[in-house]
Amino acid sequence: EAKSDQYGRNVGVCWNGSKVHSGSNDIDQSLNYQLVLSGNALAYRQFPSSKQFLPAEMDARQNARGVWNSQFQNPWEYRKELRNNHNNNK
Image (cartoon, rainbow, N blue to C red):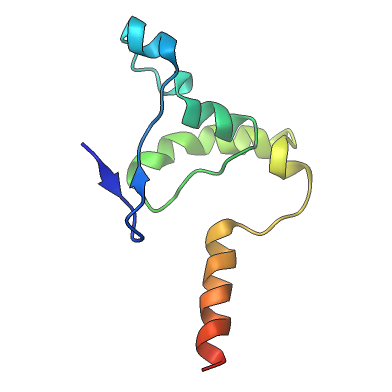
């Protein structure tokens, strides 16, 4: 089942080739999970199913991996700030 976010972008879980051939459903084998665990992606909180990635995000944060190795602004906070600034400048 394909899902889309509010902007019409496809949202889903990506699996490496070994999952496809083994039939594994372990979320920790997904590319999504590995990206979050390495600190190169954040759990997408707009979808309840993404909550399964929160433990990986906490682990990356606690171990200062990827983006968690420095200060940054969450993408959803950045976009909200842009919208607010745009609306205030009208």
